[in-house]
Length: 115
Length: 117
Image 1 (cartoon, each protein chain N blue to C red):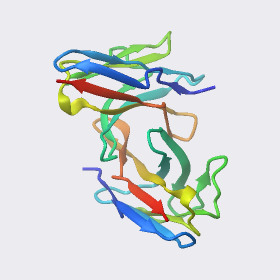
Image 2 (image 1 turned 45 degrees about the vertical axis):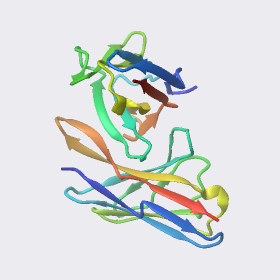
Image 3 (image 1 turned 120 degrees about the vertical axis):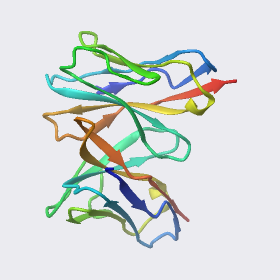
Image 4 (image 1 turned 90 degrees about the vertical axis):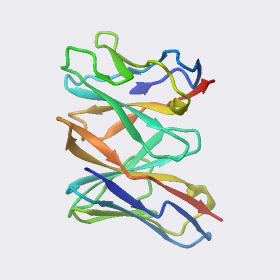
């Protein structure tokens, strides 16, 4: 079974609008971390936001927020006020603390911001 | 802080030759380095985990004799693609786990785009 699932291969959003990128995960660990990364066409991986499994509040970082629903095992990324520079691939990733501390990535979502 | 420098950023090599990719942690000590491979428009797939001073742990299906990983110091990990073939053409990226901003996060190299002709 996929550990991280991103069901939206591609998304369009109008500039200045908000957009939600979906991510669901599968783990039996109680302690884990969820990450979102942005990958522009240059290939670099840019860290956006982190949510720990024990964090009770949803994480926020500027225009990025994470809608963490633990019971549903979802960790959706919300980008508010989209900008043209937000066009990129977005990856959801999970670290399971009992599984070697490596990151497992979802398939990614390509976000395209329309002017 | 917590920068990983990866070189080269782009390399073209002839089939049958070997290519070495380096990842250096510039301002911290990287006990563990993760190596990923990414095909065009695909996700990052973990190839192996290298630990300083010991043998790398390879993921299932990754040929350890083709993808040689060395982590001889706390600031340098290398991936050598031996006897490269066109199917080895891909984007390779390294990552180190770091304590930053109050969490254990990950810092990535800028990636190496390998083309085997």
